[in-house]
Length: 253
Ligand code: PGA
Image (cartoon, rainbow, N blue to C red; front, side, top):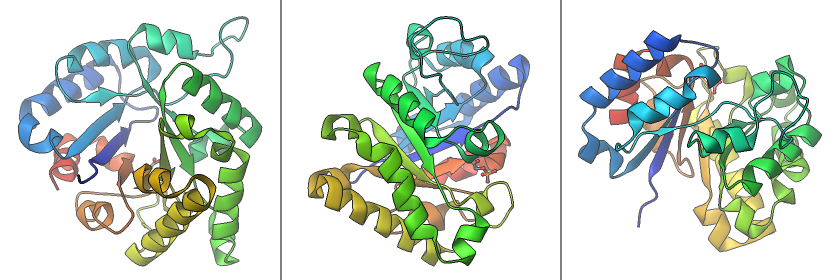
């Protein structure tokens, strides 16, 4: 059976209550549920305050709602943080972890990302885990060793059972929000590399099964070519997921 393509909208710190709810209602109105969702999984990640209402709006449809972050403690004196247990209580079962903005702006290191990963998995929350190299890394041709190191320090500390709850998002940092995507060739090579190291670590079954998404300046014009490239199982989309016409085109591509 062909794997479903996974399309994830990462809204980052955009949209208020009204913008969030009207986007979701319009999206569900214009999308042809049967046609789209039989071969695609669509996930939207709004901001924390709107997760609950977003989940209510998408109830009874195939659209899924994800959180953009999580904290690695169960509960307690961690002002401003959100736990796995809180997310579960409002029906959120998917979270993005390790986005480069979290790593760079909020100084999340691999040690804390691993803890976030583990707490999410403990609560059976699916994880979209982001990895990616900087422009300098690629210029020095270090992209493969960097990606392998990122996986070794985080994902590769997971058991075979845990891996089943994880999607990988390969997001070259130099392509995020810049308008310049990686070339199809660069994407294919990196995705093949990632699948091969999963193969070495977890064997054939897991490496074929794991979904590897690409992220970084996907738009309605390049989405189809990227998402249907070898070893690419979907896309993580920032800017272009905020315009409903564009996002509908991406999802329909
Ligand atoms: P972009 O963002 O599509 O705006 O490049 C992707 C991301 O940050 O996940």
